[in-house]
Length: 253
View: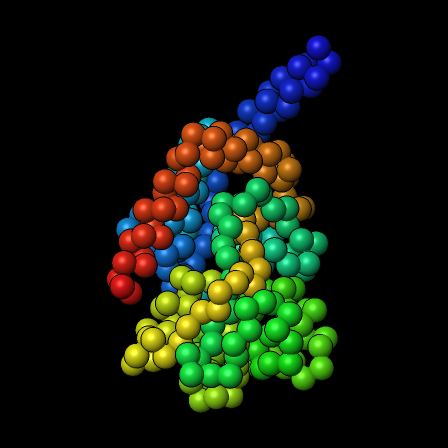
């Protein structure tokens, strides 16, 4: 009985946090198939957010900024109530609350087809030259970078990483398949010049972030999570993910 009353109290509290004002959530583009004003539904993650918020009983608008640079700081300063989609890192975790994941993204290693990297396991990548752009998460590289001979290049963009791969300056680019396909198509005349290795490098999750110091921050995250869980159980969110992923990958077949 006590558990039931506690649950009822939680639902009542969450519902009381709703206001007549729309939540403003900020993102940026050039991240197909996840976000992009030119994409159908403005991208997979935007469509997920647009489905979750009404389920949570929250009015909202999604604002696009030209670049990703100031989204976190603008949100902390109160210009927006939340920002998405972001991977976990320790600095963000100190400043923001994370919702449950909107999706999981598998990071896989890409190498030159004619290159020297032939391993079938993560440990076999030790001693190679990696590339990941500035501003990307780094925690899944920590152990490998402690191994002798393992190095890391950090250019400005993912396309720059693939240019370094083409030039033979780096050996391995661990990145999600969606971002890789677009960058490979940009850099290589023949996309078959690059291949992905047969194992998963890491699994990363995309979240909505809410500033910790914001009023009712935890209540907002709880409310979003409750709606997200309900939609997951009904298969609604996976259907949206599948439609966008298939649409994106078809153009590279």
